[in-house]
Image 1 (cartoon, rainbow, N blue to C red):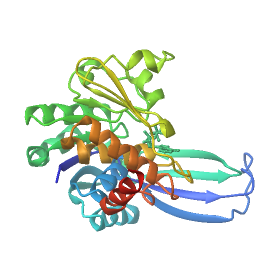
Image 2 (cartoon, rainbow, N blue to C red):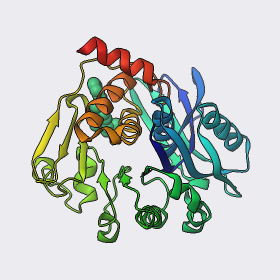
Image 3 (cartoon, rainbow, N blue to C red):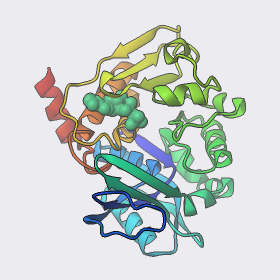
Image 4 (cartoon, rainbow, N blue to C red):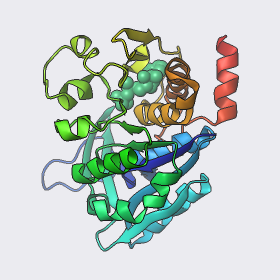
Length: 296
Ligand code: ADP
């Protein structure tokens, strides 16, 4: 069983559904409201935990009701939350309005942006105990870079899912064991905006896994050969959280080797899109095994 340390964001998604979007200054009645636990860090932690990994998370929430609720959700998934500390800044939220198949989203990072390199130093023992360290870019880049340094100090692989898309400094790229962008994030992360992703796949030999939606994923072997694994055919209901599920699975299964880890991550990602919500569709290990047996 892999021990996965996630350094990342924890959000509450606040979702309202309306028939039309409100105009500036307008108030209208919506049809439905719901809250969903989210944040790329928390999502990836939950994905890995459901698949049997022993997961520890480092992050920050506000000293408020959402913060307490989100920590409880993570604990119910069996995730070690002792390094998730409270902040005077409010818990991160995403305010999402859905209407006629479209969405408008405001993300307020809140406490996530209060996660500092010093918070990571305080959790040095968590790095020492991990098999894999996994981070995303919804917490400050300086904090992510320090996570990479601590992983290096302890000789642990450092996986970065560079989402949301951000150009990465060379100092951070140099410390990454595995970069896991989608095709858009790849060109932004490598400071090559607008470049064809196919041309960029060879840039990080042995250090790149790129997701490609229903087409599956590509990874680059140490000798520079690009391998493709087709996605699994499913009926997509809600693709939110597919990338997070893939990343959590990749970290949980990395010890099985790149080809097998990517195959299982593809399967987990495919299963995740068959149900609504980011965390709602994340499969358990038993569900993943059954799915893979049905496919073979
Ligand atoms: P992101 O959500 O970060 O943009 P992708 O859309 O590339 O990420 O999806 C991540 C992974 O989830 C894919 O590599 C694939 O394994 C799986 N996936 C996503 N969408 C589908 C789909 N429609 N059918 C099957 N698998 C999918």
